[in-house]
Every structure is written in C-alpha cells, then in structure tokens.
Image (cartoon, rainbow, N blue to C red; front, side, top):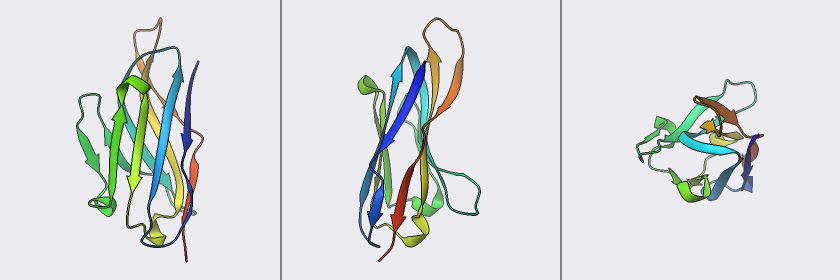
Length: 121
C-alpha cells in the first residue's frame, strides 16, 4: 500500500557532498515525522535527522553543521543534504516516515530499502 523509495547515494571523496531523496507513494492520508537513519557495518542503526510535519528539526550531534534535512509535503518527499562528508559517514542510509494510510485511523512507521553512501579517497 505504501512505498518509500530512496535515491542519491554513491561514492564521494572526503569533503564532498551528496543529496539523498526519499519519496513516499501509495494510499497516503497523512504523514507525521520523516527521518533519516544510517547503519554502518558492524554497528547499530542510528538516527541521523528528523523533521516533523510542522517543520521541527533535530540532528545527531555527529552531523550538526554538515547535514540539512528538509521536506516537501506536497510531494511526500524528504531530503538530506550532506556536506563536508567524512569517512565515518559511510553507511547505508534509510528513510523512515510515520504514515496514516487512507481508510485507517492510525499512523505507523514505514521504511525505505536503503541507499549506500561511501566516503573514501
């Protein structure tokens, strides 16, 4: 019923930039928060940034000042602009959205399939 599709990952040199996108599609009545998480090899998945439907934003300390999260509600899309990338940013990045499907009266979390970001010289 609902799909989240991410794009924009890839290989970049240290100090470089990437922009991730994630679009939700399907029978969507509404979306609360939209978030980006990441999981590096051998580590637990961690929250990178989140943005509420009202525009409230939070970042992990490790990315503050370098990453910017934004969303386009009309397109059900969330973005993550990543600047000054470091090797420790290497991970699979996952999009998450808290969505109410049409015909239901509750919200639940949906996840994208993940996109690989590799920062290496």
